[in-house]
Length: 281
Ligand SMILES: Nc1ncnc2c1ncn2[C@@H]1O[C@H](COP(=O)(O)OP(=O)(O)OP(=O)(O)O)[C@@H](O)[C@H]1O
Ligand SMILES: [Mg+2]
Image 1 (cartoon, rainbow, N blue to C red):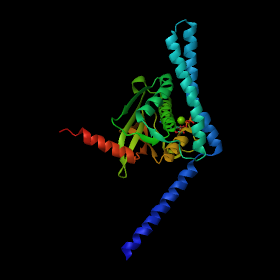
Image 2 (image 1 turned 135 degrees about the vertical axis):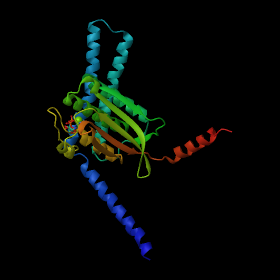
Image 3 (image 1 turned 60 degrees about the vertical axis):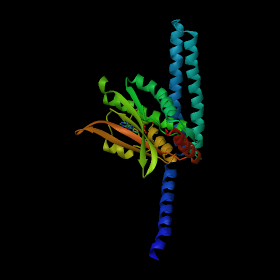
Image 4 (image 1 turned 30 degrees about the horizontal axis):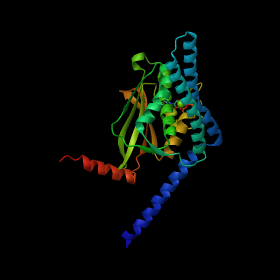
């Protein structure tokens, strides 16, 4: 009799825990003031890119050093970033309205290369090398790709700012982005991590990392990580941060997040059919 009673009680407990967790996540979602700051913050990246491409074209036209083809390529990149700016406004607006993220099955390689393209401008400016590794055969993720790309860009930007702040010599100015499969509580997930060689996280910074408007930078708004964590949690994932050590010395830090892989019933069927046909003999 006791054994049969336990199941509904445990279910109720699990339900209550899940509800509490949802409430906590929702309360972390940003307020109006934070939303205005987030939009401003995120728009900086495509605007910087547009400004860069335009300045490049201007100086090359002045030097009469640009072919029509190169000009077209630069204009296409400029236009792509302007479109992205529009998408960012739209996605952040709907994200803050607490509606579900605008999810679609998204290719991880594409998200990584779009984020890298955007972050590279900032990294190059700070003389920081970027390398990235994306494991083979990762599944597509049911996410809003624009939002996940924003998270990656923010993490890479923080990484390069920290390397600059630590004033590392050039062999030690590097950021590595890695994307690998991972299991979380027995479920398939994909882990993204950004490792830097910067100054690392002091205990008082670690404590307030995700607080809105907390920044140790003269020009920082302090909204980047707050937005990142909200985005990841709205996709049912989690973010983590840790220092990296060489003996007792902090050599940098590692920000990572994982996102769950949703098993699409149709995709699963298609995949197993594909496997059967591949079995030789
Ligand atoms: N990779 C990192 N290495 C060291 N410290 C970091 C790193 N990333 C974040 N921090 C610390 O966390 C703080 C909050 O980061 P967050 O991205 O939220 O704001 P910010 O970078 O200061 O400003 P913003 O992103 O709004 O321009 C930073 O000011 C910095 O002190
Ligand atoms: Mg930041």
